Image (cartoon, rainbow, N blue to C red; front, side, top):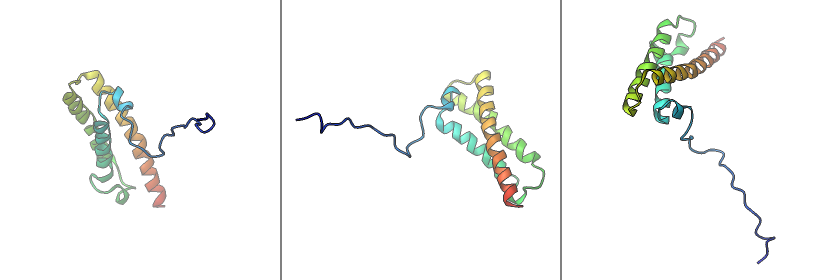
Amino acid sequence: MTDVDEAPTQRRAPLFGPLPTHGVWTALELTRGQFFLILTLSVGLFLFIPGPLWLHARESHFWRINLSYVLIPIAVAAALYRNGKARLAPIIVASAVIALVKLVMTAVLLVMIGVAQT
């Protein structure tokens, strides 16, 4: 048995794999599912209430924006209550982080829809 044939094998991370179990949601006392569910519901409200965004891209988005942001602290408080961690500071911090991520996502979507319709 020689050492020449036994070259060390390097483990490579798969190109596609499961989402990480630890992330920004861990620091916010939320589970990954809770974080993405709240974000998805909030973005979904923005996209579809009171009608599909792409059909009303040039209209006022006042109600659309307000409804989608009102959901965030309510859903965060419910999720943290379920986790047994419902305190004011974590609710505010988690709501702010999710609202910031949502702001970036919806701004990019709105610009893309606006550019596509010109």
